[in-house]
Length: 431
Image (cartoon, rainbow, N blue to C red; front, top):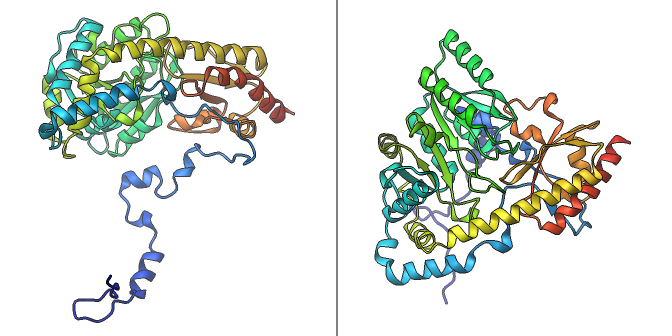
């Protein structure tokens, strides 16, 4: 047993805290040193985004409606454990080293075969580059194509995580509304014309065409074709987020923007997070080979985890993913139906909504009360969800009438309880 010696400097003098250094860094705001992107995002407090709640500590029966998280009891833990063990038993030498910029070839080939089967395409491994989740995939796209001062058009509302990723490359975000058929084509055309007149370069349009986050809307086939043509005429890249495309309830959505365009001018971002488990952190970009090659040239993160990708390849190849996705469609359809029925039975005077055809989310418009007030009152009833202002680029007061409820992670029984509890919250606010 040895006693630890005091830390010393090279000359043997005991090190002392440098009070001058402490004073300088204590008095220097971090924002003075942050990048423009970090300042725009708001350096420091992550609680400013409208995702925090003050909950009564004595309330034990919380219903989580906040995040788009797959149903926990159904996550295929055992199947994936078997796949991981098989990789470590049989492929350890290859699985325990860096895997390259594009991702494991075996999984890329399986992804191509799977997407060909789903949409009748003619893809191969060169059409895919795999990332640590779809957010990293979008980061790679922005790094490859966005210059400071470029503009990007997004839906309002939209998934704020991806919008902030685009903004972090010093892009100007232009928000256009979304209606029952998807992103407003008229608003996109107007935004493009105004940018042309102002000498601004619109580099890309980001859209979630299937079971939109947060609104649940699915873009119509006619709107998709027109959007592709409009982007081509202005030479604007189209980025399609397909995170929820496979999670339809009855019928699949229209053909993807990628399929309609054969990938010309379109990149499709995908992920296993919503169909399997968020902890996998396996996302990808599906694009023509010249684009995936360009993406690889500005990627410097040493690639993705070969162990996880090889395990995922075994899981996909076994056919277990297809059976799991089919079961999830039925489960999420039941959860959504139960939630909507509960809201119609108990909250009819207070909310308006359209039932989605798939995905994870229900978008509510509040009647007679502000959404932020209802959100706070609902927290006291054990309901956890974000206010809709979180999903707008310009979170003004006009947007404080929406709520997003995620029905994916809470149980069916809990979905039936949402209506009565939310009605109590509305009555408290209205009265």
